[in-house]
Image 1 (cartoon, rainbow, N blue to C red):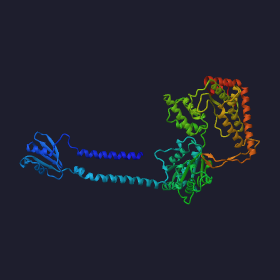
Image 2: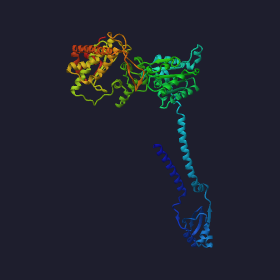
Image 3: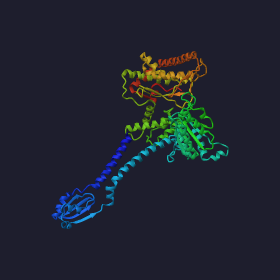
Image 4: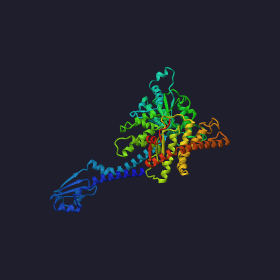
Length: 605
């Protein structure tokens, strides 16, 4: 409808313009008074007419008193004969200067030729317009199987120096770049160019940024496309687009082809979902053939990225296809500080800002999360009309990213506020006193996101392994809020529901996945099938009997029960400290690390 309306407006404007053009050339001078031929003949008889000018059918009359009159004659008729027929005497007519002027070429064409040509022009333009529409549709139909791969802009280069962290990954990728730039150095020793490089890592760790850095360093053509762009509702289109992509790449080889989110087309085949003509499977088959088919002389390196390596087809991962699988982990504290430094380059920071402290407070944050933290800090500072970003802005933005924005409209009653204070005090007290819990950095009863309050405990260094005793102390700490409510108020509230979910999930993992249970043996229980439907596993394969399932439930309950008792004992033994923390929260709403340690002492190593 929008295009039809637009075309109608265009045609309307054209018609009005042409009509205006005709009216401009066809409009008589408004200052000239029009008279009839009979009146003209009377004026000639009275010898009032000095001159007559004939231009086509238009007659302009100039009188002796300098007045100008106008009339028109019949087409094809002589004005002198017409005047004679009206009774004008020839001797009086001979006293009048009669000038006959031919119409100009432009006026002649405008008045006589264009009226016949314009309709044909309109018909021609209409036919051309319709033909162009049809041709465009045919062109789209013919280009349906072409890949939408875009070549990277050579002006906007990203180098490895622009990517903070991921040191090992960059070293691996530098070899690929070196191979593209100096292939002779490797081929002399019989080394073959790698077919593919697979970047594996959680979302936000910089896989796409590293791929762009490869392009910037290698200085070779770089095509990039998303895995989802191959798949269409029509069977065979994806495979056609894969062929077209590699055809383009072969013309400019050596080059790099980057496929982002390859799991969109690279999922394991034969899962039972979709028939033998499943579009995704045909696309994957074509990728496999192009990467390791009969033609293995092309210098094309395929770089792909995914955060779901567990669902990829084994044929895609074998040597000869993706020879190198580079794991990009979450950044450690050193990498986080470097990433923050990169993202802070275009942001005015106060001198007090300590990015190392920010890195310590953000364990488990990806590069994208850290970028978001500094962006939120800039927004907070701008909202308060500050010219520079302070340390407080950044620390507040960390909590906003982790928990959500402050809910100032979420006003608690005095009783609810007291329950929340004791709930968070219970978490903080147990986390501080149990040796395997991380140090408490902040306790607050200010609502953020869905939480009425929160306790922030952060590790002093990055952890890669966890022991059973650490898990048990974590569960005891998570139970601290519920136990505190039960001891102080003799009942529990719905505020512990989120804690109970996390406790149940962690306890079950300890029993079924980590093998940390002597009664059931050192094995795992249950495995998920590779088939995925709507983002979830279709079903879990229970490789254990109903009797074992009952034992698992009993062991989970027993483990949680022991942690509950430990939390209860800690709170009963330190009731005065619990009251002290809760009362301070009711007074100040927030307790930072230094104040917390002054309140109940430093954490024992």
